[in-house]
Image (cartoon, rainbow, N blue to C red):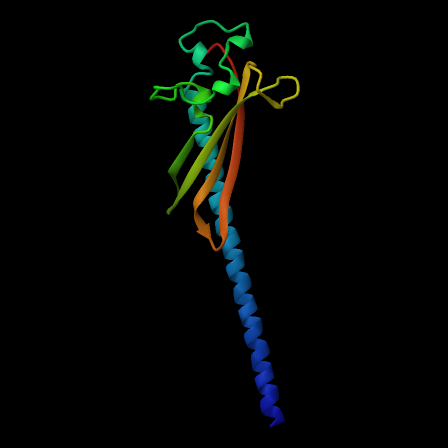
Length: 170
């Protein structure tokens, strides 16, 4: 009888150890997979911001201009950031303020991930590097990327920003 109880106890210990090991393996796989999705989210954020900076002008008031502005107060006020009424194309940087893209796909190897991207734009104080509502010759665009897919209870998220200054390639 004692040997049977000892055998059952040993079997229970082995089963609990095996279950804990399996749980650890699954958790490591989830973390590894979520890191892969976070890397994809960061890639998407960098790519989208670079595309926006390459494809749009610095400011609506400067589109088509061939000279550099000398007075920052002539630029769009921060309160007016966002796409202009009636405008169908995002042609300047601040048109992306409070803009969200949904279902953006990104493929790495055999995996395709889907993300939602929220943008914000602000002026940057050249002395402190902080954002400001006062017009300056520098703007920062920020992209917050969130995965549409979950791994267990985890959701991948990445944020990327880049500051640009007004230049002669208006």
